[in-house]
Structures are given as structure tokens and as C-alpha cells.
Length: 124
Image (cartoon, rainbow, N blue to C red):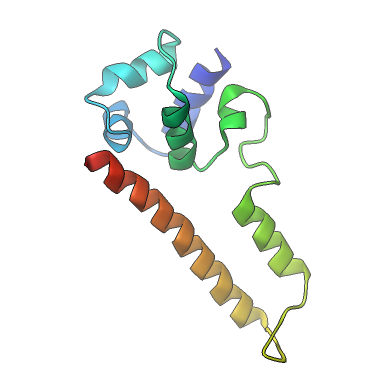
């Protein structure tokens, strides 16, 4: 039941309807999403992974293994913490705050690009 509850909470938190989430997941309609949320259906491992990506959380959170929706081992969060807490050099020059902000923007774009690829694959 933890998955069902967290699925519904995350869907609402992301401002998605059952229909819009079903569309992102490449499902025909909201009945599958309703089944996930009421506990009568369970997603495949692949769908679970896709759901976690859409919600920007981990499968561990959705399954109740952790109570932290954004665990510290999240790659982008880890990298952000590393960039904020260390001095970096490139070609003999120390990267300043503007350089580090640019790096974070690039990494966020890469993350969004991966989510867009997921959306495109669902439409095929």
C-alpha cells in the first residue's frame, strides 16, 4: 500500500492528472494509473523506473524502502553538493561561482534531456 499512497501523492505534487501521467507513461488511459493508486495493479520494473524519473524521485522512495524522496545518493544532488563545497580548476584556472553555476545549468539540462527522451520514447 505504500507504493499506492506515494504514487498518488507524487502525482498530485507534480500537478499531473491520471490521464496526463498515463500519457507520459505511454498507457492508453487512466485506468492503469487508478489501479496503481488503489493497489489493484502493480507496475512492471520498467514502468516503476519511468514513474520515478517523471516524479524526480527514486524507486526506493516509491516502494517505501526509504522515506526520503530525494536521497543523498541522487547523482545530480551529489554533484551539486560537490560543486558547492570544493574548489575546481580547469586549464590552470580556478573556476569561480559563475563557472560553477554554468556547470550546474548544463547538468540540469542533461537531466531534463533524459526526461524528454523518455517522453519521446513513450510516444513511439
